[in-house]
Length: 178
Image 1 (cartoon, rainbow, N blue to C red):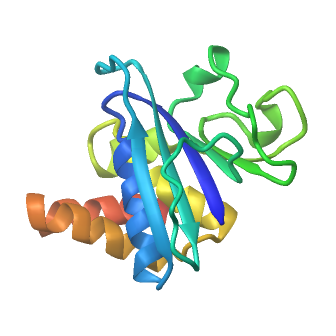
Image 2 (cartoon, one colour):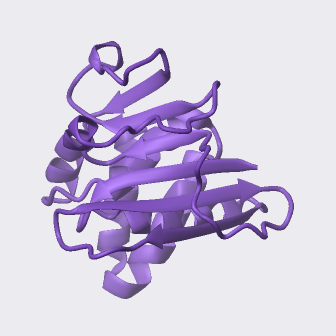
């Protein structure tokens, strides 16, 4: 089972990212679950979301305490939250940051990938909503799902509700970050 923990701020789309990743995994014939952790969240407050992907049915609905991958939608959270707490020894971190991976201090040696998802989102979506861009970087870093599956899941999630153009632009943000 591949387990992920998403860290973001309210309004950035961490929950939507986890759900979209799970849908991409299902498109590929896997089982997946995604769910948020809610406290007294408000826009801008730290939020958590979790996802699990496996080739077998998934029965666990608890928080992910020992993730294979941590996804960080806002690198300002690095100053306040221990992002690598519980991360498996061979785990990885995907961070939305302008910094190079080797310049990001996570407190120990960890496979780190960084993408400036904010700039990608601003350029393509005209808004600092980084969830779809970070999914492209996640697909590239982990290989847990194909970028084509991410794009399809994004189009399904955004295209029908908001018009095809929104789905297409968000899929482009993922492809660009990939």
